[in-house]
Image (cartoon, rainbow, N blue to C red; front, side):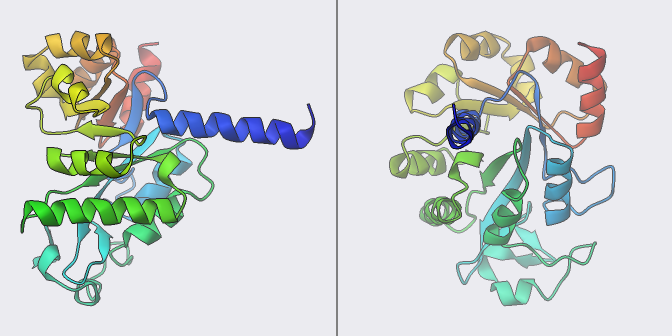
Length: 260
């Protein structure tokens, strides 16, 4: 096989890995990037870059839409006491993150996320709108459009607490991987709506251990958040989840190494 054909085959293999949104058992997802150990701002480009540099299987981030339709990365509904959905982007960037970065746009964040990134899945959480359900679905459409424009859709999967947001994404993209966050639906219910995974707080799975087997039997992705204590990490590891979302990726790496 010549060099160009080998390169093409390897590229296809990489696409399949990302598209599956199911890299390996107990794969680490850095919650809001890998920020804690080095005191980077959460959801900053620095924390994303560090997750990629650590070669983590995934890095999660949160998307909001401003009053003037800019898609920005931030966990909370407010940034510097300003409600993001009712504030223009130009007013938000008057305030810097703790490391001097400005509030990143989705375009900037994804652009960085696809640089020198061979294995870190971009786990995009679309926040439910505090204004209206319809606005949340519109934000989802704009988010997917931006990610496709950057040709990052094969390196991205989507999560949300708003089930209608996930269903809206499925209506415009039949192939992308979706995971539900709220914890109020069984894996079988989720699968019936063509959602690929359940990404619930670990306490939900402790209350409903039958959902772990149900997800595995139904070939539904299992992800747990936000798993920061060693005892909880060990329990999830023993259950062989697909993903573990954590603020402590370095500690989780240690636990996985010990338990091999």
